[in-house]
Every structure is written in structure tokens, then in C-alpha cells.
Image (cartoon, rainbow over the protein chains, first blue to last red):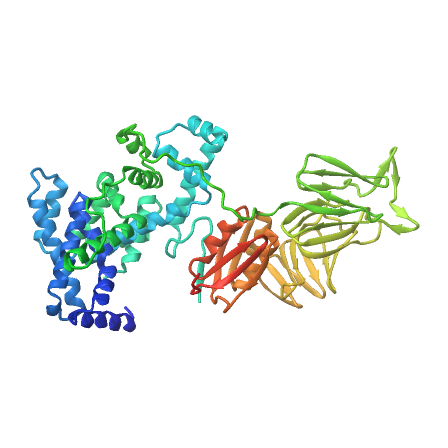
Length: 198
Length: 406
């Protein structure tokens, strides 16, 4: 963590204590995604998960004067969201085994900060990889296969290409995606493994 | 605390089935470090759980949510303000989930799972046909111009097979390849005919335009590949004691063995002498140096003798990255610590566009490979990566610094 980053965060924390709404917005932007991702881990209904995050931020504003520093804000938000998740889980009538384990986790008060970030990052990598599939045709063929459940012959018919092309494109796409994941340093573009160094 | 990005990357590789043993050890260690980590690893490997999470963790979805939730928060904190936001809960678009879940399953090779669970429900949003991007430029193709010994010019395209005649000589043009009679002699009625006109040797020239590439098999069987904006002039028959050709641009040679007749390449003010070999010459006038790279065999550049894997620039010999030097022939751009101007020169030649730079030049060096068969916009999107912005109008590509506000 760069010194500048730390300083900026502490500035925001100070401004929040002084009821600066802009600082609140920045803090929100900084934490929203990871808090939502965390809530979604415990709470299967995305709308409910969103409620929890929203409520926590509302609490934060209401208790802004008591937030000592950046670390305090981070802990406040995470703990707040987790408590709500815990309540939500306990109120579920029938829990799955997985949900039981989640309850256990919450009860153990484990520090899951890192895991949240890993989750967020993993999904980002995957989304990025798909997004970077070259050409609309390849993406379209993939989606038609798995989203619409079409057979290669049906896809070929719709897209006016040969069945072999459909099959080839699918094989190629999977190969590219695997290749993309296989390379160090971190995943970048498909086909082109590009890295700018300055 | 291990770097979250690094661990995420390990998980991604694990899901794709490409985790090395060393990395697996590292990932296992992380997983076993705590209950939380273990639980997370189980979630990732449990398709149902993982995919249901994936639904909502998509960039577009997240940012929409983010904005709306903030509006909601403000509306509750400051009711006196008039803040608009949609009151009802937004219902989750199933199609969005399928779109990504499907692709993920594809990556992780568990298509069977999806077949089992997928309902044949009609998607809410019907798929639209992909729209070609306007102003995009197709990659280069097989294009060249052949100038015959009498000066007549013929356009060579990737068209069907054709035979071109030059005097009494027959040349075959087929699928991006121009082929001369293998013996190097024109034959009419079984007797050898020398291509001489007033005692002069007849020459042909093949040249490629911007956005073109071609291959020619010379009268002695030597194969030559021409990159864009390149040319080669050669006699229609190699009658001299040497086989001499003159070139410009970037060409790849596979020279036919003939110990009795050295193959000589004249370029700029240099001379490359060859004995049955494969090498690449990069002699673009707008590139800073003339580079000759040897793949196989033996060449003498000026007075320097090269061994395979070596290149010669300005009389200096050194080990070169051969893969990179000949990448163009394999249909790939290959860059190693290349600055943006170098990159754009290659782009300009292949896509036949003019490149302009406005404002500060983006700094940074590029390393990597790109398929030459992509369209220009596809390549630019891969290249730009927040390092620069661009506009493409007709055949002019303008590069702006990344922080330009549009």
C-alpha cells in the first residue's frame, strides 16, 4: 500500500467526521463492491444483500463522528454487514449444509477480509476473460451453445456458417480461455498476451 | 497476507485445469491456512454455489447496483432532497446469469453439468446478431504487384489460379504464391530459351502494398515471403555466376541450395551472401536499422558471417530472438520492449492506415504477441489497455494520451 494511498484514505476519514458528503461518497465507492460481494456470499437473495450493504452505509453516516480513522471505518462496515447477514441466515427456515457452514464462519468471527478480495478479484478475472474473446462470432457461438442450449447444427443454421466452423470456434475459444489463464503474469488479454511496462 | 490478486489468479488457473505443481502447493497452503479459506475453496469448487455468486458479481451489474443503492441511501438520509431512484426491487435478469455462467462452465469444462440443470426456458432478451463495428479495418491479405521485364504491371490477388506470361516465360500465380519454372530456364518446345533482350537479362519485380503480403518461388526454387510494403527484383532466369536479387522492406528467404551459385541479396547499400539457408531481412526505410536474422544455414552480411540464431545490424553480430524476427511470417505481430512508435509502424503497414500522434506520446514498452488476422479495432482494443486512446477515421489512426477527456 503506497503512502499516498494511506494518506488519502485518512483524509477521507477525517472529512467524513466533519460531515463531508463527498468523502462519504468516496468511501462508499471504495467499499461497495467488496461489501456486496461479501454479503452475497452469505445471503442468496441479491436484493437482500443489497439492503444490508445500504443499511450499513446509512449507519456509517449516522455514526460518522465516532469513526476514529480509516481502519475503524473499514471494520465498522464489514462487521455491520456481517451481523446483518448472520441475522438473515438465522432467520432462514431451512438452511443448506453450506449455509450452516457460513453461520459457523460468522460465529467464529474469522477475519475474511482477504477472502472477500480474492473472490472479487477472481470474478473480475473471469469476466474480463470472457469479455476479451476475440470477435463477436466466437462469443455468439459460445452463448448460443450454453445459454440457449442449441446444437451445432442449429447454430450453424442461424448464423449461416458451417457446422464445422461452429465446432472449430468452440474448441478455439476454450483453448484461448485456458491459455489466457495459464500465463503468468496476471491474466491480461486473450490472443495477445500484452504487458506494458514503464 | 498473500496478495489477493495473486491468489485469485491461482484459483483461476486451478479452475481452468492449468495449475502447475509449484503453484498448486502454494494454493493448497493458502487454502489450509484457515477455515475461512477452506470454505472459500469449497465454494469455488461447488459449481452451484460458485455460479450463483457469479450472477451478481459482474461489472455492469455491480456498477448499476452501486449507483442505485447510493441513491437509495441518500434518499433515506436526506429525505428533504428530491432524489429519484426506483422504489421497487430490481428483479434479477436470468439471462445475464446464464450468459456468464454458461461461459464460465465452458472454461472450466463442465458442460455436462449445465446440460443437466438448464431449463429450456426462453431467454428474456433475444440474442441479437453481432453488429460489425463501423470504421474498422480488416487485416492485410494476399496482395502484390508484379512488374514484368517490359515494365508492364500486373495485380496479383488471392484469386483463382492463373498463368502470367512474360515473353516466352510462364509464371503461375496461385493462392498468394507466384511460381517460376523450377529449372530457372524458360522452355519452349523442349529447348532452353534464355530470357535475354538485347543482351540484357530480363528482370521481374514483385512488390507488396500497405496491407499486402505475398510469396514468390524464384526460378532457382528459392522461396521468398514478402511482408507489407516490400519488394524484390530478380532475373527471370539465373544465368550469371551468382544469383542476385535486390530487395526493399521485409522479406523471409528459404534459399535453394546451389554451392556453385552463391545467392546474393542486395539491400540499401549492403550485400548479403547466402549458401542454402533460411533468413529474414528487415530493411524498411522507416525503421531505424537494417536487420538480417539467420534461422538456418549460413550467411555473410557484408564481411560478417552469421550463425543460426544470430542477427546483424550495422555490421555488428549478436544473438537475436528469432521467433520474434520471423513472427510476421507466421501471421503474428511479436513485440519485445517495443515503444509505441515501433508498434504503430507495424500496424500502419499491415492495416494500410496512417498513424498520427497528438499530445504526449504514451510511454511504456510493449511485450507480447498479437494475431495478424484480427481487425484493426480488435488489435487496438487489445493494445490500448488504458495506455492510450485512439480515433479511427477513414484510414487515419490518431493516438491520444490516456488522460485525454473526450
